[in-house]
Length: 204
Figure 1 (tube, rainbow, N blue to C red):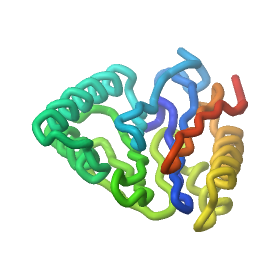
Figure 2: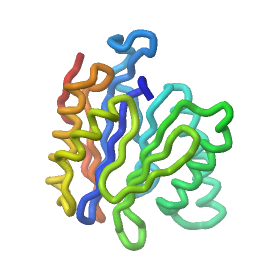
Figure 3: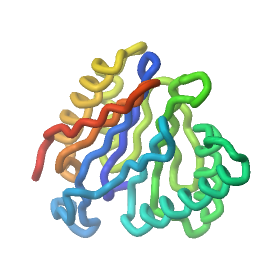
Figure 4: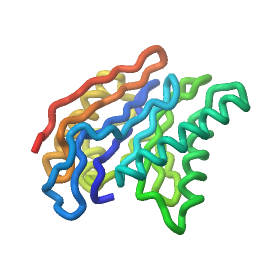
């Protein structure tokens, strides 16, 4: 996606982090900023978040339909939705509209409710999932984030180390991409708490 922000998730040692920028740009003019408070990361469960990037109307539509289907699932099954089940549901939703797709890419970051194992997965606009044990991302500065993630991420990072790595990755990636920035929010998910921090990045 060339417009609509970006979302990044990284896996740590017993923790996982997901982050997003706040900027919403214009497809006809890459330097034009429409909003600086575009919400892209949504809380799905006690230890699960989903990040959606792309066309604003499609992001809101996909989130509304996801939330509706999740509620139906949890009422019917009488249990909390697992990260794998949520990813499958999101993948199926996007695949249903593959011939006229939602212009949305997604990242799921969670800790398993039973084992507390980290889980991260990215999904493209036709519902193809990519599960990794390191980092995943989607959005408009993917090339910049790929290089920074490969440089800075290491296995078995603790919560604070994971936050610092996420912050540095976002800061350096945004400095190299005009369509990203406007501030960023990082969520670090642990077994007993969720840490949310706003970091200062390029604001133009």
